[in-house]
Image (spheres, rainbow over the protein chains, first blue to last red):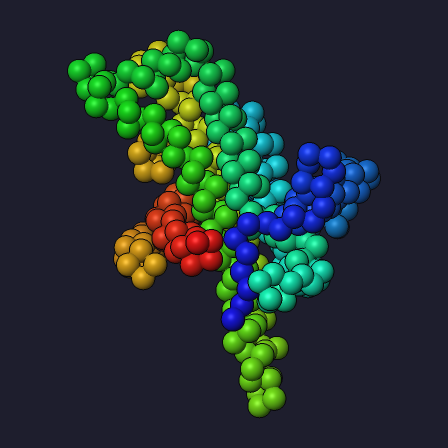
Length: 278
Length: 62
């Protein structure tokens, strides 16, 4: 049977701060991201070299998506979306490297020997995903406040369109606003954690057959490829959903007929998920 | 978990088939269909993930 720990294990403590192995994983992702940013902006030019244009391809794809969905003000929040995407992507893909989740200290718990790994997938800990979701929540509330002003934002949040529906719709509105945080964080955590469990289970199932068939080299490899794809898709989904929430928050006051510069933005808004759908 | 998997399974199937239909009718629009499609799949899939998280918590954390 595979040993699965739902919480991140503690490694050591610096004063009151307890360092878990998930924190190590997330810190590694940050370091990789910072080093990559430093390395690739050091000698980038207007006319890109071959390596630079290869690296710009995914950014250009994402910029196209943001421009298509984000409306006129897409440049304001595009860096935020890119940052979330790259961070989650690197944290997800780092967790698929060999050694992550497998190299560690052996510990004896309840007479059973388990391994406490030094590094664990960052997003396989709810703290990381919840933190990201809270950042995204603060971002879309702040964008909404900046676009509509405090009065406009509160009016949008608390008063429904036909005024007599307010007592019914306002709680639903508030809950749907808060449930975005839960659904964002739970989705990423569930996917990454389930992926880790899936890989461990597949490896444990196929190692038994290793003397007959070399399945243990093939089957986990297939699932590893699948996890690469899932890591990319989940990073994209997290970034795109944050972007959609920001777009909704910016565009919300449009329905009240105020007529300033962005009343004509983004016909795709109707295709974006409605309030209660998260 | 099994029950929780049924609903998103049906929902994802309907969403995917409609997206493929739409692309088949209008191949040039596949770029515009892609993003709402991914978002819809993610929102549908979240229900299944909830079931998975709850079952994993019951299984390992109790």
